[in-house]
Amino acid sequence: MSDKIVSVYAVFADEQEACRIGGIVVEERLAACVNVLGPCHSIYRWKGKVEVATEAPAIFKAPADKADALVARIAELHSYDVPAIAIWPVEKAFPAYADWVNEEG
Image (cartoon, rainbow, N blue to C red; front, side, top):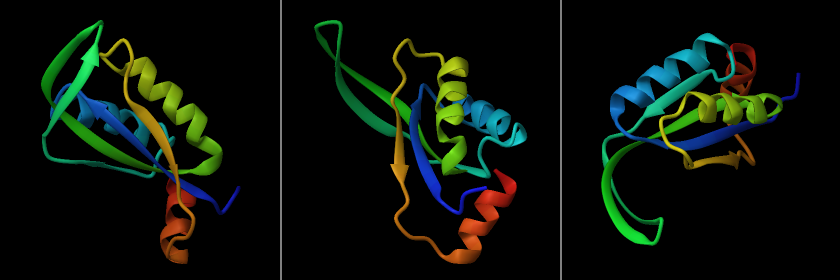
């Protein structure tokens, strides 16, 4: 087990989808935790048009060695054709927190 951890940022159609997928990946031990954030307003270009939507961002905390599997699982469960999912490396973390993420993820 590596002591490195990551945060994985993803955006969902709504809070219910974020919570459903978050629950699955925590249960499957791909992530130790997910924070589902309040709604955000997204403005983006899709298929040649500017779109506006309300979405639900979430931040997953995971061991670095599970990051690729976590991203793949989120994408598999996600309702979007091209979900926004990005891995944010964690340079430093409180040691007890990093230990917890690695034990639970």
